[in-house]
Figure 1 (cartoon, rainbow, N blue to C red):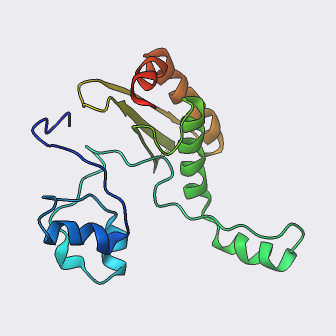
Figure 2 (figure 1 turned 90 degrees about the horizontal axis):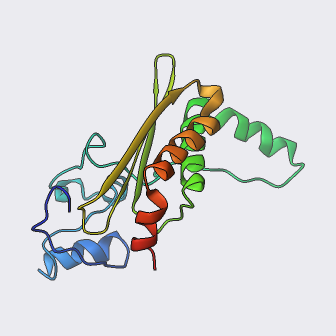
Length: 172
């Protein structure tokens, strides 16, 4: 809304097909859904635009996959270890620590994106009021091995900028 205050936003529920159906039925003008879901359904031609992460930060941990295994199952642990991507793990760790630092859950208007760059990890974060008129932003950089610290530091910067007061206004 900060960039398009003319929009009227409403919450919709349902799977990707249900949400796209609302557009076809002209119940809504547009829906925001993950590109991966559209592609998985073979409906790439229905994508009318992609929101760039340079302007629209995703939710913390968005798109990351996790594998959970039984404790002590060494065979599965070996398989999982081969699938692990340490840089992705560091990025998700930074984003999750940031969310925890501001008391985040999936209902908060919090965007965060950690990216691997030469020399380490860069974390950008924003909290935006529901009407889009207030934005708090913070960023930081640190080594991959210090991802958790980076997330806490950026979260602290948001809190110091007034995140808790803003979140108190937007959370039920």
